[in-house]
Image (cartoon, rainbow, N blue to C red; front, side, top):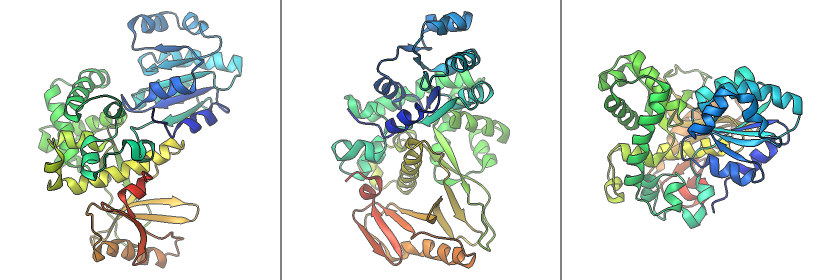
Amino acid sequence: MIVRSARPTLERLSQGFPIVALTGPRQSGKTTLARQVYVHKPYVSLENPEEREFADADPRRFLARFPDGAVLDEVQRCPTLLSWLQGLVDERRRMGDFVLTGSAQFDLMAGMAQSLAGRVGRVELLPLSGAEMGAAHTPQRLDELLLKGSYPALYDRALAPEDWFSNYVATYVERDVRQLIAVRDLGQFQRFIRMCAARSGQLLNLAALGADCGISAPTAREWLSVLETSYLVTRLLPYHRNFGKRLVKSPKLYFLDVGLMAWLLGIRDARSLETHAARGALFETWVVTELIKQRFNAGQSADLFFWRDSQGHEVDVLFETPEGLQAIEIKSGSTLASDWTTGPRQWQTFAERENTPLRTPGLVFGGSGRYERQGCEVLGWREFAGIT
């Protein structure tokens, strides 16, 4: 059994909130984790038509079945329950009373903001991190990891990635997309997902994305929000400080699982990946998602940024720490090149002019080891993810 890093966060939040919400993409392990942590609470899935009908028709009696609380799975399927939960937990005043899980963050978070403000602690659970998989489960070769991704099902069953991802996407489009928006042409929506995969790690241009898919920019914006709502993609915003330079203002788009991205790009084996034009984007996507997972597992918001100016100077990832601003450069090559540190060092020069507190820039690459080089802390992919 793979131990999830978010478990201590769930247990901590259960001490201070009457309701704990565990959200994330389908098949990321939410139900498994909730049932492991709250083993003594009854479990109810609102995907079950009978339970959902009961909850919709008579929410008071539905909740009265759980005097000691419960795990309510896929609770976004019955949003009326949230208002009834508010009155119940206010009356009982018991911490860790109910645990809610959901795979559509917009519907669930909107309901919680309206009905459960101040009563709910939230953890977002993405697929497995490198530290969670560890040396025992992580593929030996980087290309195999980029091809397979991190969904738990691919590590506890005898499943080929191409079989699992094809069914995952089909199920997602048929169920979640139909629930969230009225898409007349599901095939066109699937093409949209593939075009987003081809842009992971790039600046987002909604007009160009829509034109390539044969849809308008407003439709592309709506469809992209569905992918974000379902935890398939995320956006990194440009860092807000200027450092005396004219900045790029468009966000960057990233998939939240590199294996799904590779499958959508039509990559089916590690040998093809070795020389594929998207290999660098796949590695950058994996590094960014690892950083996001570290924060989500600790119960924090992602708060990751990038920096790029009009002259082409760029840093792949920036984030703030108590010790200062941390810059991360990402390179997929397995052998360190001397010019890889140029970007972080140039950015550091700009930032120092503004008297910004800084940490030593980091450089994550597709090789191995941990050492300092030209003013940067260099980390191989395994060392960065905490796999070794």
